[in-house]
Image (cartoon, rainbow, N blue to C red):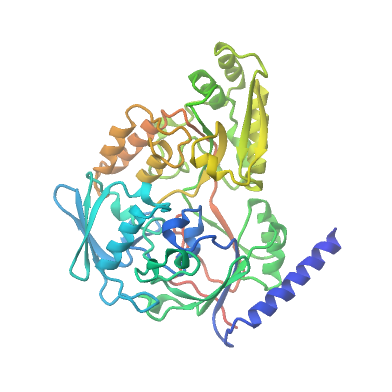
Length: 501
């Protein structure tokens, strides 16, 4: 088996070396070779897939971005201000911006993007933009957004996850744009072969090009997780996403393992509109059956943390008052099932998952629930996302990379139309009001954190989600790559260097 693995690695190395040699890189260029799962979609309006926005940030720039503390800071917009009431916000764009196709990135372009994100039939962002009523271009540089409610989260909302601005000219053919990005980011695509590789070069017209120190980026389809470390060690790659199970091997190989902070949280998703979860006692039985530390030990290999909320414990929106409200208590879980009228093994359910990503977590859930009296069967559905987002499943697993806006994260999980709420249109009583207060609180208000945690507390009344664990985003890099700024959930390309020697 070992001989076969190294033979495959050698073949991959030769093939990738050949590809790199044909990619047109000049001697002495600073090149980042990233082993990664390539995006299925290159149009941010329809992408909406996990952490793919990090890759899209090579080709696109967003209206705002966040700093190391998660605060909204300028990007394409150099400043913004609200009106006194808080139901209108004006973004002031940097002058002279343009897309890689030469079109101006002006207020009209931002207006076109936001309207497309709200109205395009296959938009993955429309549910995130419900606070935006209308958009007006006031001259070339001012984007005026009229809101449907007072919402001070907009500068956070319009960051990388939601507002990576696309060329309106390219967007006239959305199918083509989805396969070839046209943005105003730090890099421009020069070669793209789906399922194989994507090559990008530095964009000299990027607004902050002076702080982009990489000449080329080569994205290669990520190999099997077990060969990623060998690929970095032999110089095939400089950078890669890393599974928690490979951390020890990467460190032993002398590579740099980067634990990038994030907003990640995983959960057991429950449909309270379907039996047996219409009975609150059955939901409470699941809550008490869950031993979160087992997920930390076996899924994250000790690199994560237990969480019973849609945020890691150290995040400002995490509500300490709600911590450990349903402690691990299998005896109590068994009692609750009995009180609900169910004998051991009587509740037979499919736990439907997408694939190998959730294999270990699903086995833990199966064992923990079966131990208290459920009869759980794991079912792998490669088209899992269709029944999940159609809210047709009864029991599933989900993990989110989180959002820059904590209120957006809350509404995505607990809101009546939240994409991560398997129990739509159900929402907990009092959540809507608590979220409205959090939205209406300016980000610099001394009441912001308290009101945000109150919204989290109201959301946690939901019976639709049982949170399990959180882990940082894990990357591995060679010594050639400089330190990565610890921006929560993101990779910022400014300042990053790769030794060209």
